Length: 357
Image 1 (tube, rainbow, N blue to C red):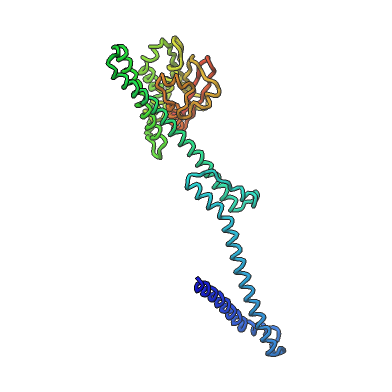
Image 2: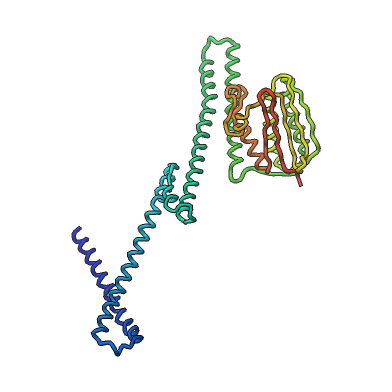
């Protein structure tokens, strides 16, 4: 270690001496030219030598000062960059709780590059943190939704081993297992659909077709559901053409009308209208006389796995993904969906889509 320190100090001394030699050499060649301007003949060789030495030391001091300023700038730059580097390392480890307010205090609201970079990193950390929270909630919800029917299936499958069960109990347990299995299948199907829709290349094959014919076909296909509840189905469909993915839009109408049937009591009424708005866009209105929703529920109905009444949704086989899929499909078609509802007064859903050119 002593040898290394000695060599390092020797190298520093040699570098200083070399720099002095270079500065004096430069002064030796520059000073005569400088003295010619002020009449060199009037100065003695002694004064010329003194001026040459001072000028050499001046050059040496100027270079040393420049080096120190560069080193100071590098150290200050490193001081400013270190919090950013630490913040990026934290984000790489999954910690998005970072604080870069140091830059705002240092630079204020000035348009400084460091300030802009710090704000961008803070914004990225916030967005990634929210995405991570959504991911964890999504995994938690999926696990819960899967665990519930699996527990039921396992419990009733175990109960079926009891040889003392009556025929009615045996049939009832088998029916519950079948229903829970259908719930799992539907959940898996919806998860795959949602993942597909949110991928970089979602399935999307638009074509021009009659929307009124599609709605009429969907209503007839689910006739057994609304017939079983003796619901009055009022249909008013203008002849309108749309450019959309017919398979995806089938899912939208089936899901929305199915929800209306699900939450409308016996002998209720469902109205389906298709009309052209003054803005030139198409509006599909589905209105029911069902249980309705509060304003708070309306704010969350398009969120994944949200259920206003979890117990009722479970009994109906709902997973809380249907409306999320509906909203995603409508957005893919450059449309929007809006809901108006009041408790015990029913719900009106309006889907607005661009008309086919």
